[in-house]
Image (cartoon, rainbow, N blue to C red):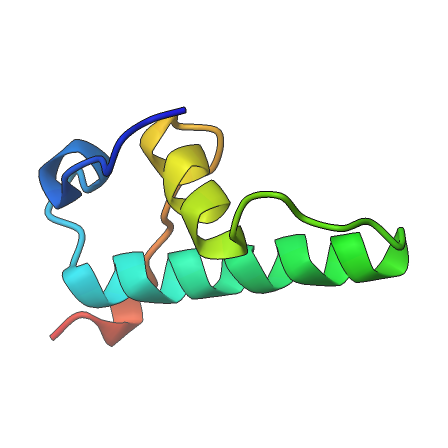
Length: 69
């Protein structure tokens, strides 16, 4: 388990903090929904799991270039 990875460890290629927050929220929601569907009890908070997955490069942030301004 990672201990609070820094934002700079997660973000690359000039990704925004906003994109990180949205990615963590979406992934945490997926984790929660999957646990609910499988009737599992989560030992670790979904947000913590999502941050660790993004920091571990299991998932990556994809920004829409049309939204950058």
